[in-house]
Image (cartoon, rainbow, N blue to C red; front, top):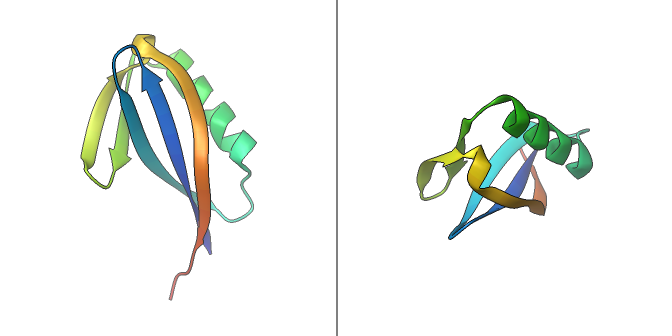
Length: 75
């Protein structure tokens, strides 16, 4: 089984939401730390959402928050 996390990125002039799928035993705090480390290492990163993919400049991100998580059932 897997978990889907909804992540909200607040930028200078926009808000983007993305989805991340992780193993069931992963906690929201771990996902947040992984995102922050990824932003430190990379100038740009890709966020996938239901509307498509976005390329985000890490320097424009002001706030990152996990706004939801749900378990996915794999059959």
